[in-house]
Length: 436
Image (tube, rainbow, N blue to C red; front, side, top):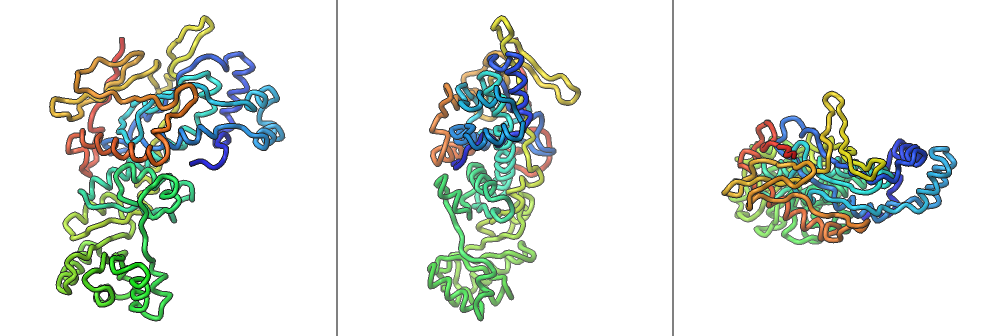
């Protein structure tokens, strides 16, 4: 959960736009903003929505306190009129969107914010920074889980990113199907399963590998995982078995040719009678490395750097655009950007996932100004997330993560099988706009 006010997690131009709109009188016009991605990262077949729960949690603390207002005033960023407006700022509008864990495609209306222009405008940077980061991590994690074909993946990337990003990444990874995380703060905040035993430094601390293994087993039990590649792998495996016996939980491999190494380590463990000892591999894995290990007797994958950097796509490239607003007569008019290669579609959207008679997704139907016509087995995608400024609590905290994990599994289950393969290609289903 956010431990501090979140309102300054924003860009200056959000507040200067607010100031100018207060001056023009347009700040209080009812408006509709949408967050969406124009395209998926090159070669990706689908994206995963993540971060929605964190946005709702942050919204509860989205306020400008005295210290922040003093900063804005002293730096001359906004004028006194704007300071007065921000002093009592609370978001009072409505937010609809795809529930966390849901899949998205180009132009999917992932988040719809309905409020005054002023209220929606100042949320833009905060909304996008959370959605873009968390969705990028979840989308990469989903590919890794697909490549693992049921073998558990462990998130281990905390040391490869900023401390708060590490918590967010762990949360997003577990939503997308990872089994557990090494990050304790993520476990504490969101009720995630945490794991971890020892690094190479623990072995190097002791006078011998045997002494290190004996100390770990004495402290953590025979079911622990022993890191066997600090020195010679074969000797490490033999020593691990001698120390822990057939109850040894796992050995971890962190270097070398992991495919070949996993095969002969499996044979060695079996020859020594440790048929139930698992093999965990780490060492800069991504979805392609995980896929290449499918033929190897690996039981668990530990993933770090590639996961927390989005595996080549560190942002989901989502944008936040005004699509409808009141005119002077109090009537809603659709508005849209028309710049080349950055055009948007005006009008408030609703979305449906079109499913065939087998329950397989065939298209993303986006209705402009109305719900698209759909068959009985088609699925509505958008839910109320904030009503009258009040976030829906079921989408936050540990319960929000649990719901999102289930939603992701169900959504992936609707896709054609090719979506879970590593081949690059176009989005696995098309997005179709329905107007009129």
